Length: 240
Ligand SMILES: [Zn+2]
Image (cartoon, rainbow, N blue to C red; front, side):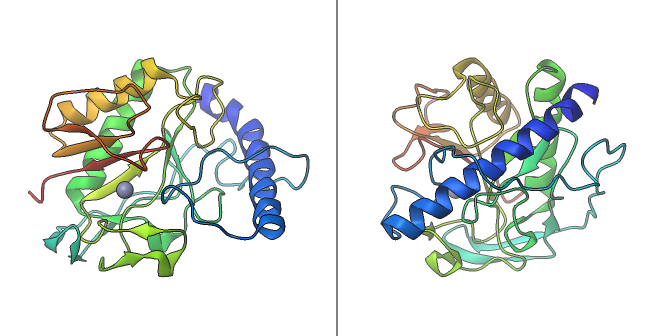
């Protein structure tokens, strides 16, 4: 707890720098096609700082998860989510990250999954943090929309082909420099990132997609390399 909280002022300051950097890039350079739904780490320029939410800094309690029995309807690339569970904006072991606005936390409309997905995610991050108490919180980006359905570029960036029925979540790679920001392939802490992959595999993830330049690996058929995943892993769980 103490370790994590001590990171926050630093972390949030860095987020502010990242947000401004990308905003400038977009304003000056125009929006261009990016290689994937998650932009790589933004250039850091001095500037605005995202104010730390009072509920996070020094928080003894994080938002509770309201569990309910969810149903993943249809397919990840053509389906919807019934009675989804909302991943809280922050937890003891993670923070959510908005891959479009490049800031904490991710918007609530992008943080829904089946109970099973949320349970798997929270459990893996809890165990990971227990094993690496000095590691900063893991960043979690998009899951599904509140009722699932298409999560296309209409919602920002290139959008997602899948992420439609509450079974998918994007998890950012831990960085070597310990910053809580998106990591490109050269920033990844391979030991920590591989441990995270292994833990999702051990919790019966159906797939963990990792970028071809990450050097991450796992059982064939479960851990697969896929373009556009050098800056995040994509975890899919089974419907039940
Ligand atoms: Zn994804």
